[in-house]
Amino acid sequence: MILTAQQNQKIKDYIFDATKYKETYHEVYDHILNALTDLDEVYSIELVTKIVNDDLGGLKEIKKQEELYQKQVNKRYTGLFRLEIVNTFKWPGILNNLTILALCICFYYTGKSAPFNMQPMTVATFACFMMVSIYIFTKIMMNKTKNRKYSIMDNSLRNLAFTGFFIGNFALLFFTIGNLIDLNRDTMLIAMLLLYFFSSVYIRAFIKFYNQQIKILIA
Image (cartoon, rainbow, N blue to C red; front, side, top):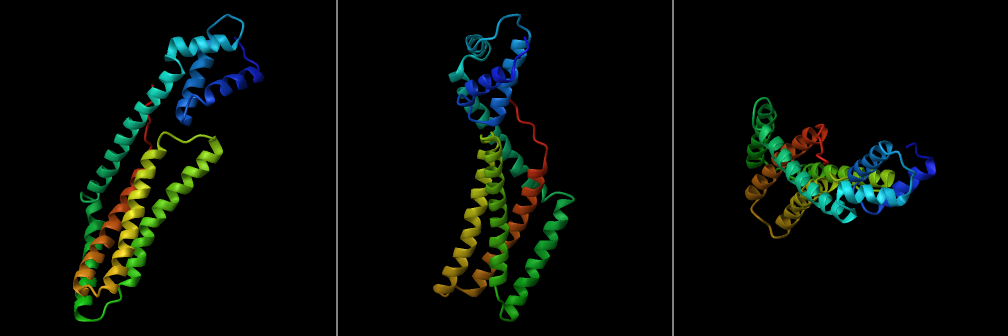
């Protein structure tokens, strides 16, 4: 069966609201086209409905499968990101960690022997986390505008963005409150150096994680 442009559009309109994510939408659309190609019948939307019901279990089943895929993807993404964090403490990533750690130790002893301005480090730590968050949210909205649907990966990426957002704001809040209540400078310095070190680990792990070609399993 060869479909006209109008018939193709009717199929797209039929399944558009039934799917939440672009990956599922394309998967269902391709399945319907392949099924129609193998049939020697006159096109009708009823025939499309029959294919969806017989092969995919209906529109409600598609939504249920999407939720299942989302959970699988979310679990996999979380695991992959944690793995990238762990990998920064393995060879050769540990070299970067040791370099940052040595820098933090130098900052610490410099701060103990002379007045140390923690504001630039606080801003740098905040900026590292915010850059990741802003990049993710911008990417998600650009893709949503382009495809008119979210990606099944977006929820996991949003979780990473929120994590960075909260930690970055915590660093800024900690520095602000510490100054207001006159917290011990040595304690503040240690805390800020730890946050600075973690921000380095976080952003390097995110870059490696994001650049991976992750295959999304869509049945």
